[in-house]
Length: 471
Image 1 (spheres, rainbow, N blue to C red):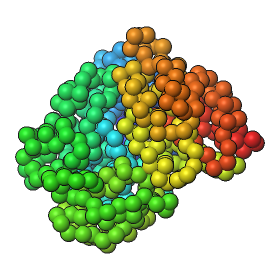
Image 2: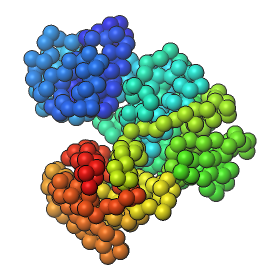
Image 3: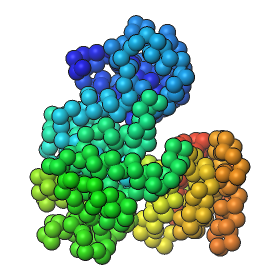
Image 4: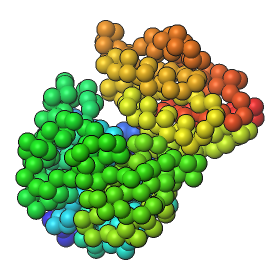
């Protein structure tokens, strides 16, 4: 399996599949792939790595036949390339299966799962291990600031990866994390999400039960004490050692904080493990949710040999992940921030963190309902509550919004009206150029503009920066 091979990846421009392609290339394999949406930044990175990409699905792309085909979960059974692979009897596997075979192998797998905080916590753990000289391998679903790539195949003991509960492939309908062989697993939170494949919180809970049961007897499960469903799963199904972490009160906590404070320079905190203080540390992260991510990392690594001093140095040098409260620019003194938030809890916590990072400033929130769940009205009232924490709100739209039945569809107008009634400046604006014009006209120096989307929001970020620059 691991000798040099010609490997073909379907859906290669997706964040996870693209990163896997880069990792395979770094291992010496001949890598090629296809996708229908070939555009930056992934298309640029693939070109840098020397990976050829076919645009569009065509069985001719698979000639000569590769040794292995890796199928991303964007690919459906009816895809002409997928049909050809089956008809020709070519060897194929899913992306998570390939990560396990080519990446994790027999390493100590640290899997970060949960509804929120996966990417940041995964990146933080990878950085802490790297800073401490442990030479970890990792695959992160986001771009680490200060790192040339979001993946690495190194010779150290650990492989760090975020464990998504989304399904694996059209032929493998299990959560991705089922394939990741967790020796250490983290559950940061457990809420309803992915309404396109899960019909209830109970079905989500069932997926996480599988993760809990996968951790071996000599492994370690680290659970946020505020995730009540995850705590219950750990108590009922875990056969390994379990550690609970949290920043507030609670008698069951194993990893906590004696104190923490969000300052303009970041989070200043004193972590405590089993009653033992690790001393005061600082990291350039902001808000309550960042404190939880920090504790998740401490819980995972403290028992894996990192010292308090190694943790302190690593936390201080961590520079974050792109699209997680990432400052894009400050035109005319207006701070424009990009954030991947698309779930009401994540948006609420990010706005609260922004209040701490930029106190006494007016906060804008621009929201694109793009994800499968946010395009539905399941969380419509929750989005109102989350966005109430801002001062000014623009609720955008998305071209796929109309694919959802009207009675189930998210309504930007209803959300904006509810926010107006709550006393906020709020508008529902469909066109991106109109959003840019409105915000450029209404914003003023020292405002902070948070842009929430798990996509490119129709190019809004750059258009807004340009408009504010000439305001």
